[in-house]
Amino acid sequence: MKINKPFYIFSLFGFIGLNLLSAQVNPVEKSQTTKFRNPIIWADAPDLSITRNGDDFYLISTTMHLMPGAPVMHSKDLVNWEMSSYVFDRLTDNSKYDLLNGSVYGRGQWASSIRFHKGKYYVLFSPNDEPFKSYFYVSDNPEKGNWKLLTRTRHFHDASLLFDDDDRVYVYTSNKVFELSPDFKTIIGNQDGTEVFQKDASETGLLEGNQIIKKDGKYYMMMISWPKGGKRRQEMYRADKVTGPFEKKIILEDNFLGFSYAGQGALIDDKIGNWYSLIFQDRNGVGRVPILIPVKWENGWPVLGDNGKVPLTGEISLPTFQPKNHLVESDEFSGKKMKIQWQWNHNPVNEAWSLADRKGYLRLKTSRVVDNLYLAPNTLTQRMEGPKSTAIVALDVKGMKDGDATGFSAFNGDSGILSVVMEGNKKFVIFETDEVSLDNKTKAITGVKKDEKKRFPLNSDKVYFKIDSDFNLGKDLANFSYSTDQKNWTEMAKDYKMIFDYRRFFMGSKFAIFNYATKNLGGFVDVDFFRVSKSSE
Image 1 (cartoon, helix red, strand yellow):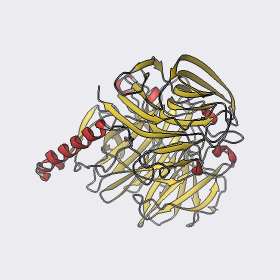
Image 2 (cartoon, helix red, strand yellow):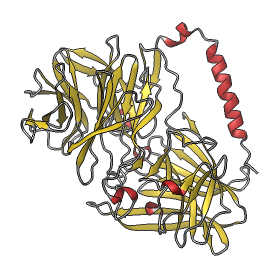
Image 3 (cartoon, one colour):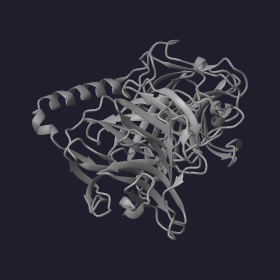
Image 4 (cartoon, one colour):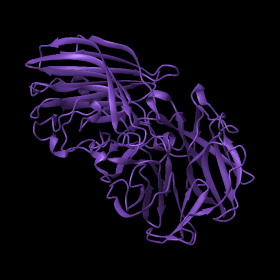
C-alpha cells in the first residue's frame, strides 16, 4: 500500500490558494518592479556566468562531480530563478567519472562561460581533471536543452567567451587572451595566448573567475583577487582594445553579513539599460550562494551596490517572474523521468535505478560491491538550503540483502549519515559520521574514517529519515532522526557540524539518498518520497 502523503496534499492546496490570490492582483500593480533580499539563492551555486536574450536571462554554475552537470537556470527578473537544463548528462574523459580507479571529487566541470550570440547559446567549460581539455557546446534554446558538443580544445582555466562586434571569437583566462577560429577548433596567432596585463605588487595570490564583457567600445574583465595575507576582493580590468593594455580598479571588498568576503561573478544589463552584478559568497556548510547587486557606472567604471558594499535588500525595475520550478524541490517519484533538481554523485549506472519497476517509487538497485558511501554509485543528491531547511525521505527496505546499506545523508567530505544496514537477516538503523581522505593529485579515496554513534534494531520495512539543517552565521548544524510512522521520531544526532572543504569536495553539503552493497548484489530499496521545506529564519 502506498505511503500516506498528507504533507503533499496540504502543499498542493496551499500552492493553488496562493496562485488564486495572485491571480486577483492587477498585473500592472504587482509586476513593474521586483524586490529582492540577498542572497537571492540560499544554496550552492558558484562560479556564476550570465547572458541575456531580450527579457530572458540565463545563468550557469558549477557542479563538478555531480551528473548531469553544468546547470543552466532561467529568469526574467534576476531574482526568481528556475532550472532549465544541464549542458551534459555525463562526462566520460576517464573511468574516474564512474568512481572507478579514482574519483573526480572537487574536479569535473568547473567555472563555465555562457554567451548568447546571433540566435544561439554557447557554453565553454574546462574540467579540472585529465586530459585537461575544454568543451564548447551550443544550443538554440537552453530551456529545452538540446546542448550539442561543438569541439574540444586545449584547457582554458576559469575562461570567459567574448564574441566581438566583428564576430571574432576570444577566450580570456586570468591575464591572457586567445583568439579562436569561428568553429572554436583552433587558436589563431600566439598559441600561448597574449598577455594583456602583468600582476602588480599587490597581486600575490589568485586571479580567477574571469568574466569578460564589452560596453561602449571598452573591454571589461571581472576577476577575484586574493592577495596573500589579504582579503578576497572583486576587481575590474578595463581596456580600449582586445589585447589591452588593461588598467585595474577594486570594485568590491565586503564580508557581507559577517560571512566571508564576497567575490567572483559577472555583469549583465537589462534591455532598458540598467546594470547588475551577480556574484557569490562563501557561506561554509551550505556552500557558495549567489548575491544580486545593482550597478551604476561612473567615469567608465562599474560601482557595485552601496559604494562597493552588498545591499541586504533592494528593488529593481524588472517585472516579477514566476518560475515554473525551483532549484530545490520535493519529489513523490510519480513521474516518468527524474525531476531536474536531482543530480547523481558521479556518472550514474542507469540500469540500476528505475521509476517504472514500482509505480510511484524510485527503485535503487545495488550494482557494485563497495565498502563506503564515497565509492557507492547512484547516490542521488539535491542542494541543501539556508538559512534553515528540513528534508524527509521515506524508504521501503524489504528488498535489502545481507550487507546492504541504504539511507539519507548530509553528504560532503565529512558526512552525517542515517542508514539502514542489513546484517544477516536483521536490520538496524544507525547514525555514523564518515570522513573521507583523498589523494591531492588523483582524488583517489585513500581512506574513510567511520564513527558509529547510535544503533537501534529495525522491525519495520518502512522507515522515514529526517535531516534538519541550520546554516545561519556560526551554525552549519544538522539534526538527524528516524521514524516508522511519521509521528514518533527518535533523535539520532544533534548539532552535527557541516563543513566546506575546498581540498576535497569544494562544494556545499547535499541531501543524499543512497543504496549500496558491501557483500553481494541483488538487493534494492524503494524510495517513496523526498519532501523538503525551507525556513526564512
